[in-house]
Image (cartoon, rainbow, N blue to C red):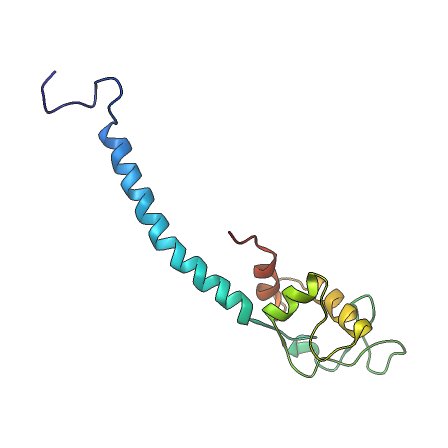
Length: 131
């Protein structure tokens, strides 16, 4: 064994492990700014209620879309809700500009969003744990 090859000695880190450690550190450094940017975009993304393709529909208390002027249903929200507003409402708050019942109906609609519906990506992002 030569003096320059210490990778075979007990207790010495192998070159491969050192290289993986260096790569891992670079990945952490480059991912953190991306996570911070994602967190900001989640807070500022928008969820229309209902999505523009169904803008004439009303929202039933259980979140289903119903024909306009259905008794007990609520008209569409005047403006999309920001991701931060939805996050706060999901944690026991209320959507801005709504009363308790309307906020609950809109949140039920948001919880029912399907992939391909405007606002789905924003809502899905709110569901991801942040660390």
